[in-house]
Length: 71
Image (cartoon, rainbow, N blue to C red; front, top):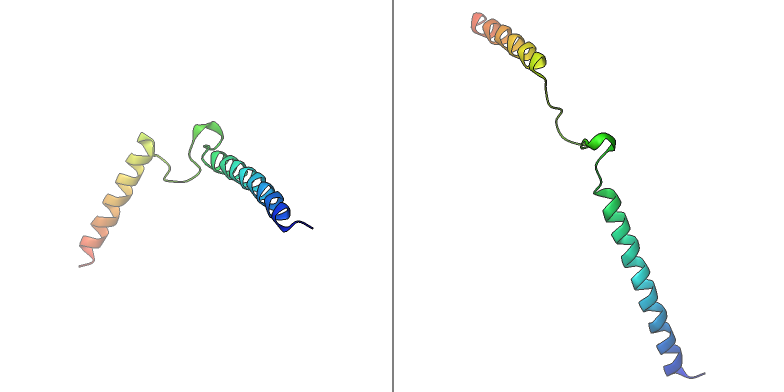
């Protein structure tokens, strides 16, 4: 058995595997970078509508008024 020939064949096989691994990693990264269906990000804060902001504002005014009274 020719040791140099075996090493050369293994190096060729290693190069093929490296290319396959790199292409699979690229696919994995491109899929994970996609947004969720509907174009919305799967993470992060939900934006509030105008009515929700008004509700939160009223709720916080009541909260702080009760905090001032309890002093």
